Length: 181
Image 1 (tube, rainbow, N blue to C red):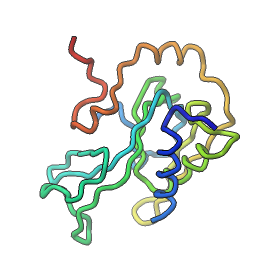
Image 2 (image 1 turned 90 degrees about the horizontal axis):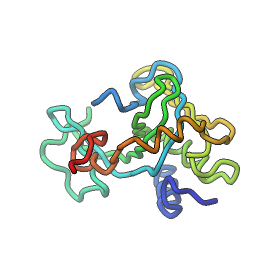
Image 3 (image 1 turned 45 degrees about the vertical axis):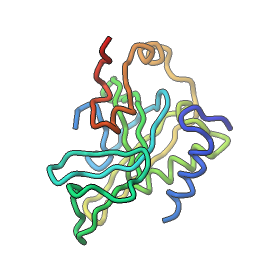
């Protein structure tokens, strides 16, 4: 099963890794109230991310050997960089393009199961529904794939004109910024 969202070797490595062990243009599953239906569009990125002590996100393509001094600590006093996956999506509720960034292990595990399933494969071929229930230590995240179907023609056409550079996230820049000519 071919996937142009992420290279097959990246999907396999991340699925194994995941199973073990700002802006209004972003969708953060931890902030959801209910369910959000989206469709991935274009290629995704993956890397590691953390928050600084002044509450700014930082991201790296690979996990740094040593985290910078300004990385915030968790409740146990540890500095943690978490795996993330990000991709541009069509948000059906808001009728606009957003960036969905997944850091929750349960969501990553569920997405990789669908990507590796021959009936689903590349997540550009089906909608996903992400939901959150509960709070704090009782929080549960769910990702469910809808049956595969073509993207609506008007959404596909609109996507051709969208400027979104996900790699800018690694430089702390706005992925929606229009590149300078």
